[in-house]
Figure 1 (cartoon, rainbow, N blue to C red):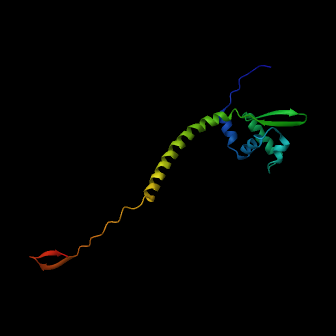
Figure 2: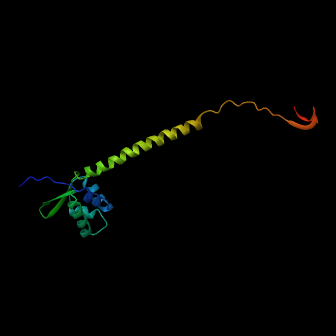
Figure 3: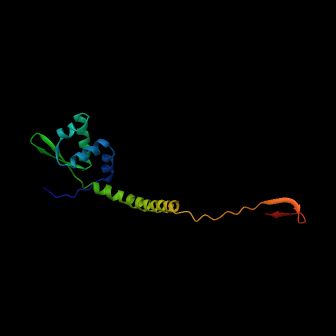
Length: 141
């Protein structure tokens, strides 16, 4: 048997991951290898529909298949998910920076609201009278 390098297509990986049923199949296989029949029983769709999902996952190299007697057993292959993780890492950095800025802003606003008010200053009331006293100038009382 020849040793060959396997190149994973990130486009095929993303296409496979786009479907919620296929993501659920991958979640199921995280627990360990399972025969196709057992996988099919976990979903409310037909066995042929699950077979199509498994075929797409196999073509994207997200699952590996081997035979045990009459059964086809599938297991998770996490290698192609590294490309997804690498792509998502850029967004993790972006969101971490933005969330840190948001946190600092919210904490500053919260600190402003919880600061005790300054000591109340006495208010001075000035009444202005417009009576003509003192050469027509208003008087203060």
